[in-house]
Amino acid sequence: MSGLQLIATGGAIPGRTVTNEDLSRMVDTSDEWITSRTGIRTRHWCTEDESAATLAISAAKQALARSGLAPAQIGCCICATLSAPDATPSVACQVQAALGLPEDRPALDVNAACSGFLYGIAVARGLLTTLGGQYALVIGCEALSRLMDPADRSTCVLFGDGAGAAIFQLSDTPFALTLGARGSDVLHAGGPNRTGSAPITMDGKAVFRFAVDALPKCLHTVLDETQLTLDDLEWVVCHQANSRIIDHCVRALKADPAKFYKNMDRHGNTSAASIPVALNELAENGQLQPGQLLACIGFGGGLTWGGMIVEY
Ligand code: ACO
Image (tube, rainbow, N blue to C red; front, side, top):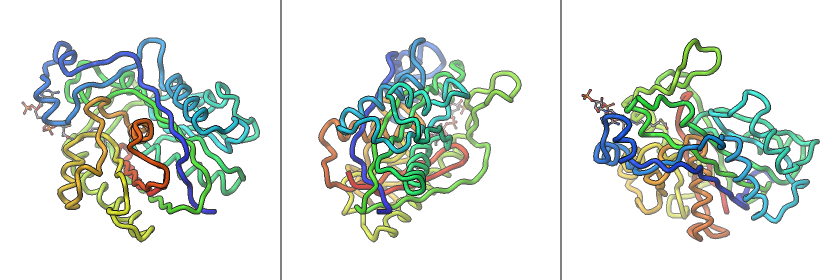
């Protein structure tokens, strides 16, 4: 078996809800500016007690419970994040301990910014096929509110916190995965070896141009590989950066907009968490049924991109 099938999801949304009206009291912005430029109305930020790791643990516990699997059956634990609270232990190791996952199995974080969940799935698949095991736990979790300059209106309105978890099983159901990277500083967030604070900065227009090029290319690549068409897919779940990026691509692809899931109005851009949070909502609401096919497309900092077709 060479592919993966999605068998269960979980999610965790942090406790502090921040509306566009709240932000307009913090910086010089307005609900009209944010909504018309991005489609974002509300986002959730971590409270003092929450972090990318606490959210990841909650989401992973829910996914594991819904899968009906025992912790001992999880063959690897991968966590995609760019906002881990600690350099070490990794969030994945914190999840391993909290869920009692087997100690003779790998647990590690990957950072490919907003494409991280798809990179994590690729790593998980590689680990299952090289080390053995049937099931992988892949999490996307972020606390981007901790990386932002809350006084910078050009970025603080865009980002939210959250986590989504998914359990995959090795399978012969339709599956394709593509990943790519091109080093560039158009989207930047500082790390510990930078002097002073280095919050998220971005050349918004360059990121927009990159995203509307990468998204359709990734979708075409995975459709070609599986010999499927858009009509065969129930959903296309793109990274939720900005509704205008998705709308632009829907028009370019002459696709049905109803197939392209959107939830950035409620969550903002949660980077590596956005795709698994969306998957969890679809599964929870019954909008995604067993046997249905979907595409997931990520694009973001690095620059990185990725696409996947998978069956639920
Ligand atoms: N409220 C009010 N005014 C604002 C705000 C704000 N929150 N932010 C910027 N402005 C002002 C700017 O200062 C500027 O004013 P000026 O004309 O007086 O200089 C004006 O609005 C236009 O600024 P731009 O940065 O040119 O705004 P733009 O129309 O490009 O919209 C946006 C910005 C929404 C970020 C856009 O570039 C975009 O959609 N980019 C795509 C990238 C993206 O979504 N990134 C998300 C993270 S990256 C990722 O996930 C891949």
